[in-house]
Amino acid sequence: MNQQVVEAIGLSYAYPDGTTALDGASFRVAPGESVAIVGGNGAGKSTLLLMMAGLLEANAGEVRIGDVSVTPGSRDFVRRTIGFVFQDADDQLFMPTVKEDVAFGPLNFGVPAEEAASLAATALDVVGASHLAERPPYHLSGGEKRAVALAGVIAMGPSVLLLDEPTAGLDPAARRRLIKLLQAFEHTRIVATHDLDFVLDVCARVLVMEGGRIVADGAPDAVFRDEPLLARCHLEAPLRWQG
Amino acid sequence: MSRLESALADLRLADTLAARDTGLSRLDPRAKIVTTLAFLAAVVSYERHTVVALLPFLLYPVALVSMGEVPWRWLARKLALAAPFAVLMGIANPVLDRAPLEVAHGVTMAGGWISFGSILLRFALTVTAALAVVAGTGMHALCAGLAALGTPRVFTAQLLFLWRYAFVLGGEGARMATAREARGGRGSPTLAVYGSLAGHLLLRAFERAERIHRAMLARGFDGEIRPSRALRWSSRDTVFVVGWVAFFVAARAVYLPLLLGRLLTGLGG
Image (cartoon, rainbow over the protein chains, first blue to last red):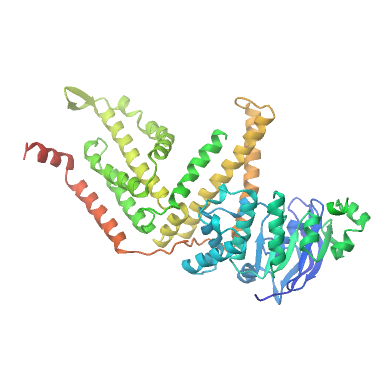
């Protein structure tokens, strides 16, 4: 896996109705690092992830992956390097069977059908979902859908994973499986989440967002003990610390 | 499950059926598309009062349904759903065309009734064949086949998105209907409520469609539809196309029911 530095430099974005989503967000993520982006609703987490994946263009600022700037011109490189797992797995899954859905990304990269099927089988094996290969995705449980959506991204062989609220809607067992899986990955992981307990298990670093800006950057153990900061950002200390 | 949800699940069954390994699904999508187009051309080429001469064409949809192991009950439900459109198209014929045309078993039949019957028969033949091909191929493979046959990419992508977003729109509609019911909404909504529901449905579906499109872009989708099973033309496909097209040409050139009648009864000649 060819690891790259991911860098956001002064990203700003306002929605057409004038709402500011990002206001000069900057940070740098080292290869293989696992970083959480936390913040209240509307803090700009999802917008930031979309921008990093080249799915939304900034009004100002730049995203860089290694030496490459994320622009429409570098789209192919970005798609191959960044894997995006969306908040709602149903937005991602649409092919008639799980194996076809997981093979969708590799096929789009021009991988021959047989090889794409093999990549899909391997990715399903990685997430422990091989037994679902022949099933239609819309009949799966929430945890199974999340696993298959993750497999669909892994099959593309990205070095950076962006995950938007990966634990939303998962039962405790599915959440635990996802944590173990992400802990085992060597990819660079950037996770937007409200689940601070999940952050403690998966991420070595946390960025706190408020009003479209990064207002704190540090180890979860330190950042989550700053109670005034958490309160200001509509967050609470992880449940396991609350006794 | 609401009526809308069950209707969507029923429609979605087409993709589930296509994912199975059947005689029909093993055929190259291009073979099925070309043969079905030839079938449609043959069926619609008859003049409007034709009924009996169309009967041999029943063989093709029946063969497709059998090869694809498509459940007849599912087909019947889909046909029933579309039937009102066919009825609407032909219902005026018996009124407008009352000239006597045929006498069968002593009963004189007006041209309008015969052309109405012909419309219904053509509808049943063509829609059954089209449904069987979709259920034996899958929309994605069908679009890939169309693209490989030279259909412009914009058309095949639109077709695929139409199929995908029909479920999005329907799903959002079903959730809104459930939410309305949960808050005591019963019976048909008033015009004002209906307008508001329709507006919200459109906005919600639009947002969801945007998210889905982004998810497809994130996985490298560029408008080109690539088949998950490589398109491979085999001798089986050639036999399928040549065999059926030869049958359609023969059925169109020769009045098969009459020929069969003569063979069986030994009369005429």
